[in-house]
Length: 504
Image (cartoon, rainbow, N blue to C red; front, side, top):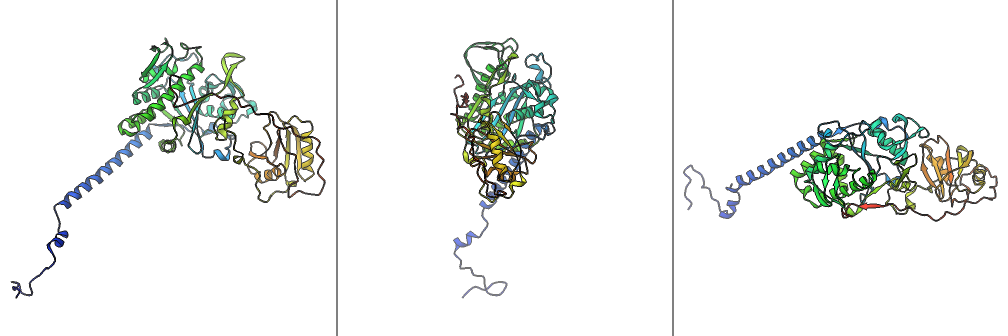
């Protein structure tokens, strides 16, 4: 018989085995677990706050300048295949303004700040390769007078490259670059002497290789032949040394700068920089303290770009210099060779030097029904083949189908095939014109208004009847034929891979 409960009623009984009851009892380990969890959460919060403060601090370091008003409204358009590519203009300024910048070297006889180093960086749309193009500071190129954002290109005058930066800052430099190359510049970044030195110091020095001893009176740099690890101030003197080495030209200095940048890339990727938060922060702090960029090129954009190019190997990063030759009026200056167009075209079309253009990448007439009648389209025809009478004959072909032919004439240096150009808003009219030229390439252009321009190059096909032609007038019998394209001789463009031996 069960014992009676002193308070009355039936005594409590619990037949649950002891082990099962223990599972539901508070134990001594639960408070300990809670303390660990709270500590982890607190650490995560603190880490997030530290990261946020660091991001805010680094972002606040950057000086941002809006140069959009200096770029004009006639900026280059992008090829469809290059829509996701990114073009960066990196400028090394020789300004003596700002704390510490007056300590380095002797000022130029020409006062003011100049673009001492000019690098156009192209990051491919697929982020699998990159091209870094050095533009000689002594290049003589057409430039807008007084850095005017509205002066048409036919009014531009030849001027030394780095004077554009002196006269109108980064905006004038970008406008000059875009006008001479057709390459659209997405972002820019300018770094001064102090910023360069601080970045090198944050890396712990950069290794350089010189095949001859250096004694430079202007900077005080003295190096024996061989390899050396240079700290910031020495490194700055090394990349700026010019008169005491080789022929004393800017071109020799560019070669040393490219080798130096290769060494920086090798050091940054082979060291533990990216995996040491304190060291990485020190480098980024140094990099941003003397940096000027456009408003859209902030730390977030830089981080996103850095993430997108993490997989690019150094063997897929190439350094090259704009092909050049002595400028006839002053042989101490240079002018760009025609072969420079190979570089600009490759960047515009987002392909590596030496790769054949992808026919599928060029916009061609679609198979969709034409929406604009020929009698609503005015056409200009240019003959770039050298074959007499070809432009007039082509105009007759188009007129017989209802097109209005405004003019015919000759073109210089036309590309192979048929090019159909149009202004914004005339895409459908251009498709109707292109339907008359099998294999034609469609391309947006400026300054055509409502007209569509046809340029006939070697290998251009004889026009055909468009599906929505007007009238039934017979097409003329062709007598002039475009000559076949000649063999393409692609000029040699010398390039240096970022993984190349710095002593080579």
